[in-house]
Image 1 (cartoon, one colour):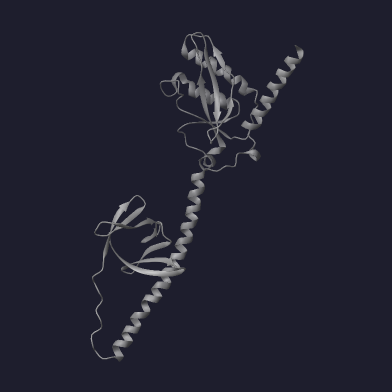
Image 2 (spheres, rainbow, N blue to C red):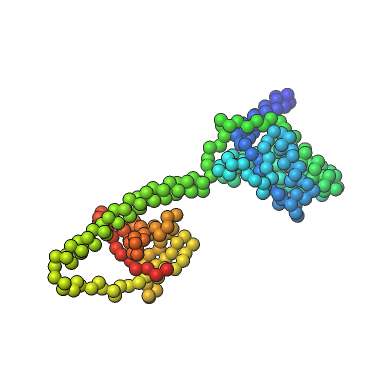
Length: 278
């Protein structure tokens, strides 16, 4: 009998140590405004009590809707979401506290706190305080060295996209400068020819070109012909009059009065003038 008691005590001790190591890796506890088994936000002041009891055990608890700390806003894996689970019957109110990480994994579940009180406000208050008795034994202390390093994926993607856009801006700036220099050259040649050759009329430019019509989309425009058939989908880049062409290794930008489409074909850079009506 003594052996069984010793084994049970050892298991409880190991569970407590494991929970302590696990919870110490998290900096924040996020408490919702309303638990699922309640009818309204902070009913019976139970959500406020949950936040208070966590703070009493040295946790940094935040109520849902509060202004988030900057480090948590960038990395929501620093926090655990708190929930209170009800498993009551006719004679007892039973509540336990559950903590879930950013990947929706349950990290910790407290013991069930119980109360025989008939009045819900009193019963839930007592049951919750009893559930926190197991959390008290954790002796929580945040360990920044072992903090969860997983960053918010959306934040990482946004930062990577911003870097790519900055690179693209620089490349487009160089391209536009090069194109401007190339476009200016023919004008000089024409002037020389006009002065040295007879006044015979030059061939007229063909004005019978197809016009594409720009239709607004959430991220930019789609360019359609008269059919109407969608020929290109273009995305905004953050630079005025510069677009990425979806599904193609191409960019579209405005040079003077012309819209220029640049793309690679068989490893060679191709340039095409497109007439667009916005």
